[in-house]
Image 1 (cartoon, protein in one colour):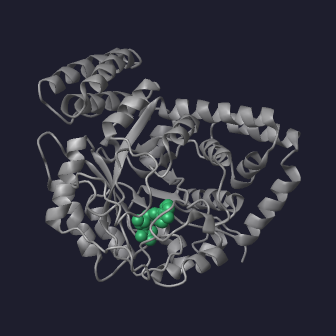
Image 2 (cartoon, rainbow, N blue to C red; image 1 turned 180 degrees about the horizontal axis):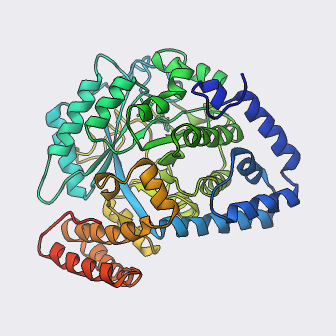
Length: 472
Ligand code: SAM
């Protein structure tokens, strides 16, 4: 197998030999300060790095250079994402699953965990609970089970979710995280109006992948790795990738992840819309220490910073798998989207108490959405409930070219302020509202164009009077 980012064969675009050669090159050069300076100079152009260059930075042990890297990651984050953080919540539809993933409690052989699949009535209850918190953007999650969770079930759920308008609430963007499927099914998801299609690679290392997925359709490494190409062929512009850190050596995964992004650019002319950085967590019959490639918090932060530098235009997501302290650190270094108030159990939002029996993994940040919003604002960020881009057709390469030219800021910043205002009016506690109003007032002044400033002020007043859903 020869490395070829343009190939449509998994083992050619995620090429084991190329990754191993990269790791060898990295070992030889991790303290080569001349090379590191050169790479940092290139990185400062903010046009990204390739997998080899970024892998050298990740391995670099020089404290001064690492600080330089962190500062650069922070600067790139500010330049492309400002101080906005997009908010979302996962919605677990079903934990039926026919796969045998060794790290996931939903695996077929787990008989401890009660199996549950939401009915459309229950989906409605979950969505109302999520709307009542203030969420506008969801990521739906389901195990892989062609009998219990066929594509028609997922499509029904999407339809139900978009149809519910409770009080001033609405879910305006549904991202989908379901198992690899066919072009035909991806077309159906596209027609259902999904936002991003998310699929984690789990591990790019083929042998480990096959060991970790011993049974079920997910065992097929090539089918899984080539899934995003099928999704894009089906017309889904925005795809989200990630690895489950802890399963394999992080340097291998890091190189694989960036090679995957390079492959998208080479074949589809546009990189991934988002990259997620989950780490293996404790769950029902899962003990993370069984996976001996777990990452220190320090290295985790360095990975986030190096991804930020390598792919400046790609959104980065962190979930409630991480605690408040880690979230605070990585938001600064590159994360642009976070979940809040999450429940990882099927039917968990409609329940008063946090239920654990059907959870996919333990949540490390169990604050309410209001608390998370309040916290973000106290750190100087603008929590954004914006979903405008894909509703305005700003997806795929259109989104990326606006992002690359910096123009996206002209929409995102005002949209963030207007959607935050909606949250403050409809869902916030009085203290959050007070902090939020002050923040909006301050941030209006950072809108570059006077004309836009004027429109935003008018719209904020209209939101006060009860109108909703303005966007640029
Ligand atoms: N079943 C779908 C698939 O096959 O891709 C995706 C849905 S699954 C609910 C979402 C993700 O949760 C998985 O891709 C995996 O990376 C992650 N996950 C599974 N077990 C986990 C654990 N113990 N800790 C943290 N994340 C986990």
